[in-house]
Image (cartoon, rainbow, N blue to C red; front, side, top):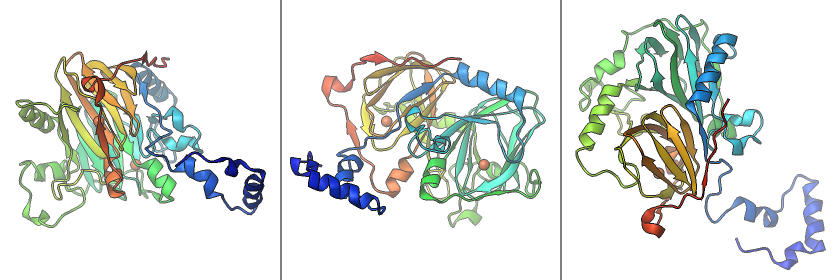
Length: 370
Ligand SMILES: [Fe+2]
Ligand SMILES: [Fe+2]
């Protein structure tokens, strides 16, 4: 929008603006420059959480409480500092649209079954021996596995192993909250009883590129979990060729029945950056949340350097210039709201043209430590 001219600052207009507001009416002439930007200006900020802090707080939480009905999960979410003003609870927003958290379950614990209109996914970062039970299927989880829990399916967690188990959760909580589309229901018992064999869906899809003929017509999430060994094979195959200039060797999780993203509203990727890889900078409408599964290096986001190492999480907000530098061989797991942007047909991207595509880091982000 053009700058407002003097007329809009006149007493006549200002008085009228004030007058209509008492009737719960609004002046578009005032609002439009702040609400309809030339390009995205998200309130979410670029930010980074160190693993040492997250791990410490999860272990402290484990001393204080167990996952019970009502609280449901021992999950600590990544609150974007630019979205704290959303009330209540900053709408649990890591980006404008997505919630991300770290969750800990201890051996012998049960996190109660429930279902909700938010769709969820998780990526296992530490441990083994715990399972998610989704619509009667116990899905056992190991490091690097990726799981989907589509909206409105019953799901709970149990842990039959011997060590603490930690994973990353991502849900579309802020999106559903802003839409007024939230439904939540506890399961009548604490946790569902299995009704199909363990790891049923993964076994049905072991071939990868073929599907059971009974799934000829598309189904919602025919596969509940995606094993790390399979994902790694795909990355290894890609790694024989040239990397993507912005993202290295990257794959996205899909629903094998439809070819669409594994989670309807949340994109999820694994990418490898070889040691020494320096991506070109670009920006796009969608926002991303990164987890450093292995490796170390830094990203430059809008001219600020964010150093990261194994276990850290960071946010790239909408339309922020970003590039990654791997100082050791790095594997990222990341989530993004590209599917949401695509549904509204607002996704755009742009390459950084100056300085041969590389930003200059003008400052360094200082992480908050415990
Ligand atoms: Fe849930
Ligand atoms: Fe990007």
